[in-house]
Length: 326
Image (cartoon, rainbow, N blue to C red; front, side, top):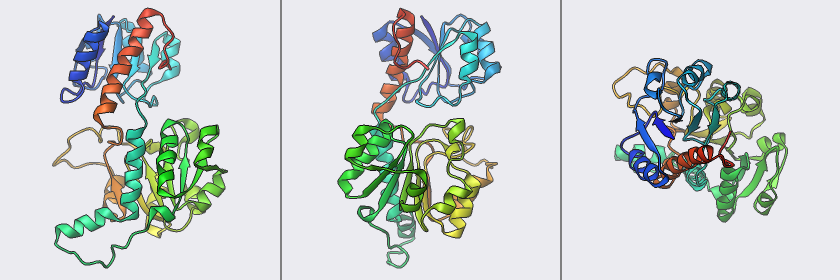
């Protein structure tokens, strides 16, 4: 199988592609560019594509299909950038990847601790040699009720690790996992919002989950609630979040993902005027932490993302059951 890779980062992914393609007997070529209708011809003569979060809409899929592409695997867990129904209609087989949940789970917990202890505010004042205490008092996470929205692999890991902090733990998911009950109490949506001091999101971006945290959701939350989002930006209505921050309903927010982050995160935009007013507003709040979609980013995860994408292609090639197939 001949593999063409889009969005390949030479500084971290390429050594893993070299290693695993050699190990599993694949030939690959690549571009650092994101796929678009102008550079689809690069994939002519190849059987399969590897991509990250990029435009895999119907027109793109039709073009790749006409070039002979039979398989597309995204080096991500999320698949909301792919028109899955269109791919299936064209006969293109799709896959994603899995990676250890600890990276995102521990990052989410780090953001909780940073938010509770107001660490960015403390550090910014320290840069100005302001070592006074006024305005720096935080809260102890061990005395908080943490509500975890979504109890898949990452949500479960968050709960397991938080259990050592002594927090009261609540969980919400349409599909309850028995192992979660050792650490947390499953509850309904309204009670989760009303009783949680900290809310953390660990669900996929689906049409059903779009803006699951909105004006009505924020109204039901405790005063001063802390919001953590390391999942997907579309889960939160950003305008409603800004209103809740301004009113004090949300006491702090730590966001590793953001609505409309495409074309923003993963790019060096130094010195450019960014046309995203919501981002500018959020950056102005001293109680908001913004990190550019880096919760996943560890050596272990990048290695897994590349290797599991190659394993997915191998399963397709050999006609085997593919655990990563979409």
